[in-house]
Length: 342
Ligand code: NDP
Image 1 (cartoon, helix red, strand yellow):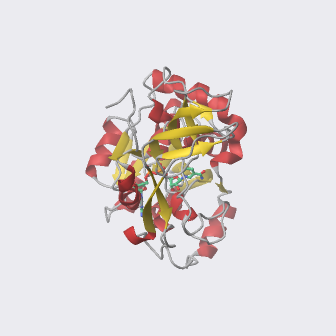
Image 2 (cartoon, helix red, strand yellow):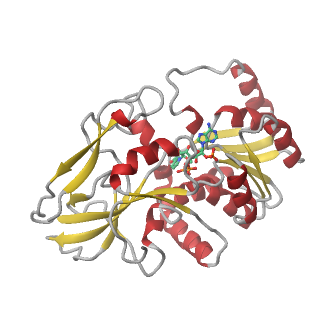
Image 3 (cartoon, rainbow, N blue to C red):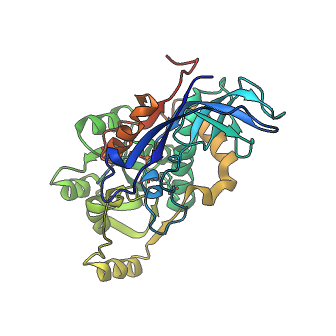
């Protein structure tokens, strides 16, 4: 049996995570006991929520303990099984964290059919990020034909799907992304109606130009300066699914906005719906999501892009890059060989 590797949380970051907040350890993967399977990780998904797990600030989920394996979703192969529900060679999606091997009692393992789509999509467009876009937009945003939907981090795993689903529903989709290459991709490849660079000092004015009838749905992924540019353009009865606030994940103090009173006055007078959500709130919609999203992907109506980092030892630097926009598409780490992709 090959030596296993895992990435553990060495210290809690203050501000931006740094390399010394992570530690790589070696371990000997154990043989599966009664009812257990041994998994070999193929694809590890890196996601912005992991920044929250590195912190012990109160949240909807418990933090990773110091010395604990960094949490995360993965696509893995069963390499030994003492569980009748899983056979050697099965591909599964599992929350096994940042490690090359893991034992599981089978609870929470979801079989992945390699014939349906590349297995990496089980943590991307057909997995948690795709589901986040689907439920956040359709359950809370409720875009109507002809309305204007705005989403930032538009070339990323969630944002790219939000804009494309908005278009499927007949709405206009305006993306916001970091830099010309990402904006070109969002417009030309993903078919958004427009895309603006959030680093452009003229963002607010350009967004106003791109949304001449105002904004009906703002799918909030980032907060910060993007929210400031969007807020004055929200139409009466606009919906704001609050999915993520990546511009604030490294904040070291909570700063109340100087204009909190203005915000609430607008919520009242424009009758805005601003609703936070966690993808698991909508677990009951999972079958609908898989049915719709897999057919949209098959028909080419939803496209996706993967950004692959090679090797588990490079997961910490890839994660630090993700928080700053270094990824261009769904951030994955290839931890071990995928038979279908070289
Ligand atoms: P992405 O693949 O979009 O990667 C993160 C992107 O965020 C970066 O590439 C960067 O893109 C952008 N970004 C970083 N900092 C800023 C900033 N200051 N201003 C504007 N954009 C910034 O990640 P995901 O698609 O996986 O996640 C998108 C959002 O959805 C995150 O906030 C995440 O936490 C949230 N989320 C929430 C879930 C829920 O259940 N509520 C579930 C899954 C995700 P760019 O270069 O374009 O700036």
